[in-house]
Length: 616
Image (cartoon, rainbow, N blue to C red; front, top):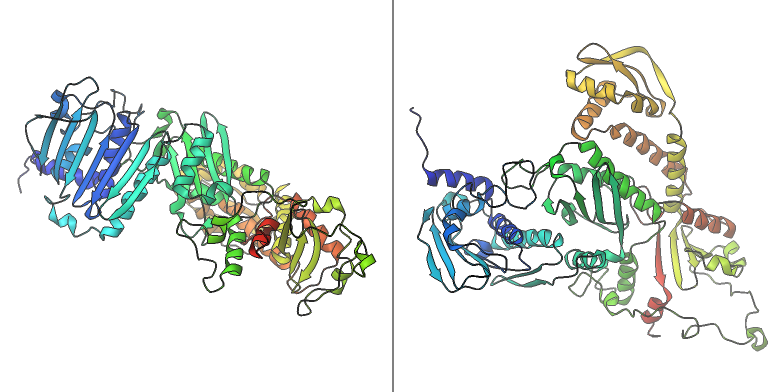
């Protein structure tokens, strides 16, 4: 078979297969072009899931009439100098418009700020028409009709209109989050209007934009993230461990303002929450990395969604360390969603905790009063008279009561012995033990319910981790060193991390060009599959330049020991034991969740309880 030169149209269609995967890919490319042009308002309109119509209108700088033919030609761009490693814009490849035009009916209309009129060029299935003068507002309007009509085989791989519409919405939100000062409007015959108003480009404005994207509950359950190391700066917000989602779609990551879906960043977020979340739950996060363009390669794939860092270990360590530091500094925080769901269940048992008003909040939470609870105005404030003179309870006494026999006698005897300073603590003073597992505590303005087993499990786990990692771990000497054959580069990487591995009890050294000799293994692991452990470590170091796998295994054993060594459900606690547990929780980072990610306590504000009973 002879070799022949492909036609320009076929070349464009091949390029379109890499750049234009689905309608959302078109929206991404066009919106990025608008942002690079300095737009402050971007309108996106769709029909038929984007396959019938996609229109993007911006108020950016516009394109000169004489440059429109270049705009729809491959490898023509205004955004890239001769240095392909110095990329400071979202687009740079010069492939988007010609690729879109090769598989659709594309019209490009534009007018610059100082121009008297606009100009338009049309591309149908790769055939470029002449430039014509038209009436146009300042900026650019790109209209794409009948996407993939020129490549009908691609249409067979499209999903339903609803799925394609959801993908467009997701991509617009991901881009909009990084540009809070730009207004984004998304409309279409197959959707309602999504209007993301512009907000100031400061910390408060960014948080408002994040709440527009991730929901109003996120700011109440988020921690600010700020860190910098060796010229790499990290900022943004990450959720507390008790505020999670069932998938990772609510994790937004950006590198120099570019939305990315990077395995290294996703793995770092997962590693930061390793012992704080259940395996089937995911944190919510919006993280922004600012890196010298020379230290990151965004030219990995035509879609520009993947990046490669020159020092991946530095980036991963920065993310993991910053999130863990924020979690430790935050102390105890329970997700506001837990109390809202509980109150919703009380208020409307038939609907269950998932009932809401359509915007992600429970109906009760939507109606909650922002006013703080005050003792002097509360309808349930204590009687300002000597109750004992009227035959009531004397000062410092409480009525002995029972809920199905679940409240312990010791608790009833000491229920009134709560000093005022204890009520001012975050978890307050213990009042009762219900069903021999739940501690009911009172603060100055709230009711707190604590799961004693989950709480103590976290306390024991954190103490074990601190004891384990405070000094080198005990190791067991192997009778005969185990030789593990590896590729030479893997053996070299393991040798570079030998000192760290030795602290964890794994003693190894190079054994020739393509092997390592393992002489010691961590005592805590017991009998271990040495070759598998070593190869897993080598794979992780190759991908992330870190050897956290071994540390995670040891922490997993510590978590198991903590689970079996903590206070069990069904054990009655004395009042002093319950209060001691509350004080330990307040002093222990991460105690808002147990080792498995379940919440350890729920806080109900008294103002909410009063509203539940119709007192406010």
